[in-house]
Image (tube, rainbow, N blue to C red; front, top):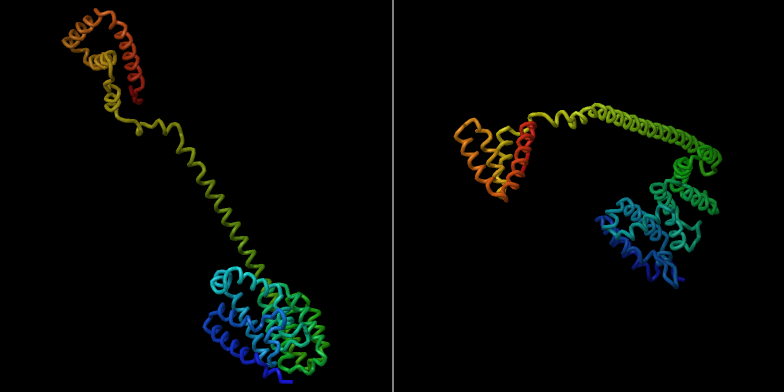
Length: 344
C-alpha cells in the first residue's frame, strides 16, 4: 500500500497550501480561503483530501486554516465583509466564537477521532478559542477530552506537552474561574516534573494577581465614569436653574409695551390718514385734514360752505353722517391711544 505522502492528491494539496499562503502574506484573505477550501472540505462520497496527506502536511494545512480564520475574524464586520462578503464573514465569526471550528477540524481532518488530532493543531485551536470566546467551557471540555484520549500522554513531544498544559492550567481554567482546579491539576499532573511544577505554580499566582489587578482597574474606571456623569448632570441642573429666571423676563408684558418698540407719532398720523376709496371715505379724510387746521378761519369757512352744499342732497346726508361718525370715532381713538397705530 502506497504511503499517504505519495497519495495522488498530495501534489494538489501542497500546491493549494503554498498558493493560499502567498495570498495570506499579501492580506488577500478571501482569496486564500477560497483556494484552501477545496482541500479541507469533505466530499459527498469521500473525506476531505487533506485527511489523506502526510502528518506534516496535514498539520501545516490545519494550522494555516486556523490562522486564516483568526485573521478574518480580527478584521471586524466591515473589513471582513469587504474580504469575503457580509454573510460569509458572519458565518465564519459565529463558527469560531461558538467553538464549532474544533469539531470541524476533528471531523474533516481526522475522521472524527479526537485523539488523532496533532498537538500543534490542538495548541492553535485552543489559542483561537481563547482569543474569540469569552466563555472557555467548550475549550476546557475539548482539551480534557483530547488529553484523556491519549493512550500515552508521556509520548507527546515535551515542548508541545508543556504548551498544552500551560494553556489549560494557566489560561483556560483561570478564565472559567477554576483557580483551585488549576492548582490541583498542577500538583497532581504526571506530565510535570518538580521544577516544572514549581514554575507552573508561580506562573498561576502571577496570572491570578494580574487578573485581580485588571478587575480592580475596571471597577475604578466604571466608578470614575459614574462620578463624571453625576458631576455633569449636576452642573447641567445648576445651569438650568441659573438660566430659568431670565426666560420670563424676556416675555414680560411691561417690556412688550416699552416705548422703544413704538413707531414715531408722525408715522402713526401718516398711516392713519391713508386715503380710502369711495365718497364717504374721501369726506372722512377731508375732515381729518381740516380739523388740525381749524384755527384758520378761512379754511374753516370754506369747509362749512362745502359741507352745506353737500347736505343739500338727501342721498349724501346719510353717507356723510356715517362718515363723520366713523371719522370722529377714529380721531378719538387716535388721540386717546397715542402709542397705537390704527390701520383703516
